[in-house]
Image 1 (cartoon, rainbow, N blue to C red):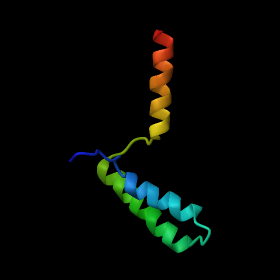
Image 2: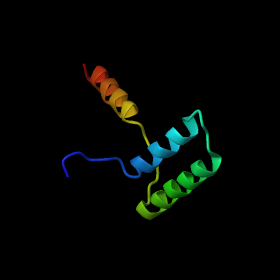
Image 3: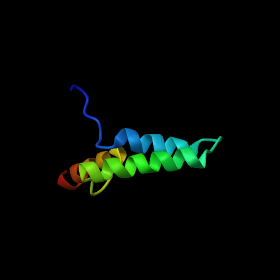
Length: 66
C-alpha cells in the first residue's frame, strides 16, 4: 500500500460531501452516517483530526524549537 489513508476517512468524506451538497438528501446522509459509525466502532477510532491540523502542530513545534 503506497498511500496510507485515514481510518474511516472515505466514510467521513462521503458524509461531509453529502451534507454539503446543494441537493441535500437526508436519507442518504443518514445511511452514510450509519456507515461511518459502523467503521468507527469496528476500527475502534477514538478521535479524528484533519491533516491541516497536524501540519499546523508540526509548524508550531518547529517555531518553538527555533
